[in-house]
Length: 566
Image 1 (cartoon, one colour):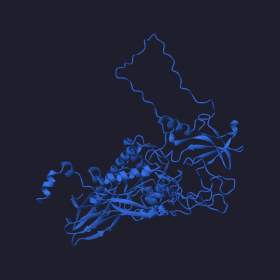
Image 2 (cartoon, rainbow, N blue to C red):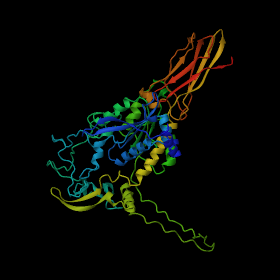
Image 3 (cartoon, rainbow, N blue to C red):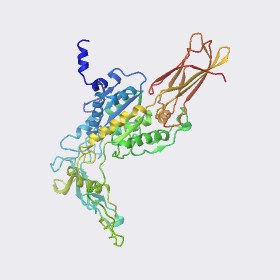
Image 4 (cartoon, helix red, strand yellow):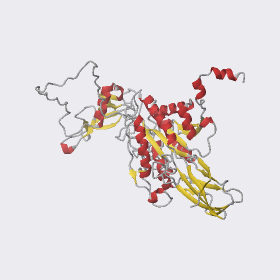
């Protein structure tokens, strides 16, 4: 103490008040096909072993593999958790947090490969052209610029022409409007196997985030041989199955359930409260009661993430869809970044000295000149036209390779160019910091919305002759339900255990212990609570206790309170 006391006195007051830096525990999820180790970090209150029955949150980024910046966001979240502080302490007091920043390392490694080619396929290849060979004709860098882009190949049977709004953009010709195609649009590459097809048989076809069983697409190269065939997908599923305490999954990648509302389906018969009734799959949709919770969370998310983009949700064969649809775990998905489809608005700064005067009443107002319209055509400008307007306005010229003539050794004169690899998924430099702040707010805010059980009342009424009517009401005061409707449909939820702890020489006359709660709505739903009644024979009831235990909503206990006879 004589040594420690001076050190403590010299320490800043803020350092003494803040929770200490946490040392997370690392764990292994799987090994990729290329031999890369997939690892994660576990954060617990005080840095020790996770508390039994405490809910858990799983944060996963860059499942698609094309967004290394999403992995960086997850790593920054882990650093903030490690640094401690009041927000981290409050979160870890409510839940264990798992972070897996790079679950698809093989696809992520492709982003820095040379030549640069945008692909997420890392798994089993297939004979795409049915010539008895696999992967013999992959895309290639024909012009030697270090990028694998696209080729415009002149062809009388071609179906593509240049957009009248921007000649850099390709649109399909429409014969109904007297348009005739000028070229075929194919990946940059060669015809290595002499079958008159160019770059049609890549070495890999299967994609990790299309290899999960929920919505698995059979007989497709991208889906893989069967659901869970890819070791990364199998490892993630095994991790989730090994942690039934998971109450929430947060993903940062290319899917979204927070900004844009996902498609919904009706709740199962009986509201999903009991494990009976229709059990048809939601088929890529969110059950209505769960969608109501997501809508509220999305509204809150939008208050501090105004620039978060919209994106599709519940992709076929995706981890997000499998977690929700087949495990019943609510997933909060947000897209890292989506390329804008229009140029940024110019904000004109008005001088402080400038005074706007109303024109005199006798002066005619001059007509406002209309903005210049696009070409006189039946077409509307495509999204790619808008994207290029954004590229031109922001100086992000690397994202598009101008079409340039090239003499292909097999195809003759072609044009090579188009969108550069990762152009539409790699965000500008300032996005990572902003998204990290938004995701940190989302992560730390869910401490208050996670399901938790609470004994709202626990009373005993004296019926005379040592007989007591004991009543209890259990509630979930949080936004999330104890059991999602999807978990009720899939029968994956663990029931809450409600147990009477009888005093000595007391006996249970009517009712049973333990009882079980199959479902308990939160504030985001009907919040009806669960009620129980027992008859207990005892001379004294003062020592009667009630204990509620769960896997994903913590525990609760109470001592009985006597009430006046009716």
